[in-house]
Length: 306
Image (cartoon, rainbow, N blue to C red; front, side, top):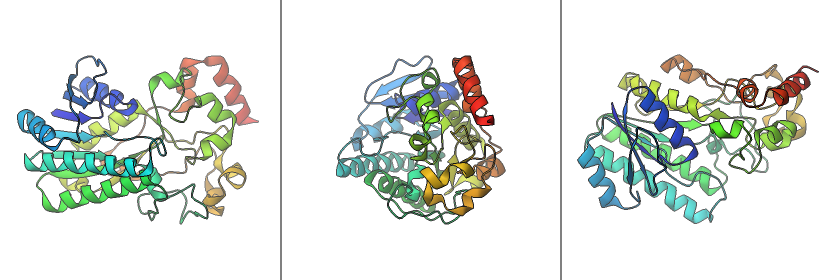
């Protein structure tokens, strides 16, 4: 397939582009500034420009569009700017894709749509899955709810298949080796202090596994993915101890249902992606840290067993 990936220079976009190219897709990366990605046809476009976006898709006529562009971190800009930017980009890209008849359009949402972290939030059920009610508590999460509804609108009104996915806390390859994550902490620091990882309910996703999910989504029958959303995360929690042992101290909103999360079980269920797409993540924090820093991972594994 020829696939346009917006936000191709970001921490998620770089890995998605590389993974799709490795799977023999022809990838066109779109961002305001190119990242110098090997084997990727990079285009510099401000996606807020409706005419430029429409012209790009009209000229390239891709088989699929994967929309990742946007402000990617809550509270990293004024609330109104986050809301306006993210929703404008999504509608502009999806509308342009629909206008030229792109067959597959996948947009990135976020687990934050559930509203965890807000005062008084309580999980309706654990593990958290796609049936859980949304309750956005900031402009970033609200923008993602709007994006999901925008996807559903085009799924109802345009030909082709439109869908969305909720990638968990994205970890890029260099971050396993000690580079700061999007919140400024290293992975080692998030593991050493459960309160840091509890902010995202211990969820995470290797960016390369996001690429394999996108590839599986593109290959699935249109009727399976049209209008559908998926949680996409690792198959374990970013914690050295079971979440059942941690939630009362650092994530009380999960409630007693979290007592069932024994062993390495994650808070977020990825069963829907496994069931409908046959997708499972290939990476976990233990194996990736072991490759990057064997001594550190041995210490953490021993701690998790104590």
